[in-house]
Image 1: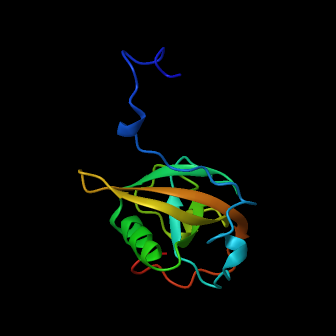
Image 2: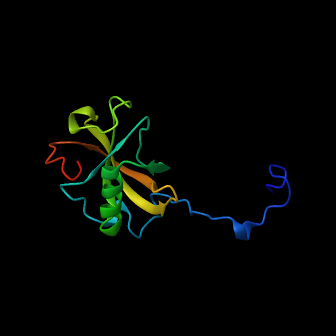
Amino acid sequence: MFDSFFNGPVNEEDMDSLPLMNMEDEGDGGIEDQPIPEELPILPLKNTVLFPGVVIPITVGRDKSIQVVQTAYQNDRLIGVLSQVDPNVEDPSSKELNNVGTIARIVKELKMPDGSTTVIIQGKKRVSVKDILGEDPYI
């Protein structure tokens, strides 16, 4: 089927695949199946807005963001995702983030050769930030 897009036949065994997840069919590990904690670590995003039901890859390069992702991935895999107000700020504080975002589940974590981390996240539910409890080691 993809032979017309590539220079030669495509061997599907050599390709990595990530199953698409339907929010209704997810069942095991869906946001409906697990309690939402009152406190979530926050992953700030530059130039990206995550909506409920959407699955996107995010390359994480900032040390604080890598720590957020690794900690959440080892635990319940839930994070709060907020977009930065100004994408040019390299290390945003809580005041430089929008106060409405999305609860997301980390589907997969991939360590890249350059030291960054790429995560596949799925937006689950819209969330509004009540209070920022701290910014160290991360928001």
